[in-house]
Amino acid sequence: MPAIAKQLADVVAQTREIVDSVIWCTVSTVDSTNSPRSRLMHPVWFWESDTSETSTPVGLVTARTTPLKVRHLAANPTVACFYWDPNHHTVAIDAAAEWLDSDARAEAWAAIAAVPEPVGFDPAMIWPDGPNSHGCGIIRLSPFRIVTTPAGDQASMWSRPEPGPAGAPPNDR
Image (tube, rainbow, N blue to C red; front, side, top):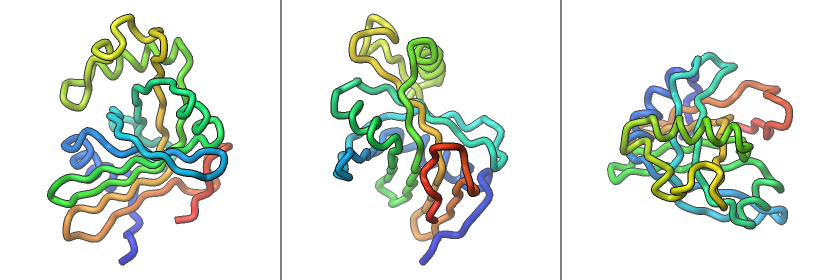
């Protein structure tokens, strides 16, 4: 059964409920030879942005700057985030991903720490020396497709209207 295309605000309402209860998701990247790699991550999503069709939620995720992750995002700066809960509610978020520079990383660090637990957390428990600690990175996620499927219900989908920002993946719905 195909997903029902909906406005961003409608999809975000369902998405946020599921994502904020699951917290952790599987994040997949693809390398330069199109080989996938998945890992468990804890993105913190900021939903309060203007939910018009030109402004989407933003995700911030702390990540170790491992050579593998750096190479994958350099080769293909997109990720797939998948949330699942035991009641079989799911959310799939496809997003453009970019490593933040040190100034933006400090702002993102503070934003993540300001969100109440369990959705937010203090990144200092991983990097006690702060956002410029060795190996500390923060990735900004800019969704271009969100598919939310509450258990037993039809999926709802939002995708960025064409043509999208420069460098955005094609929108093949």
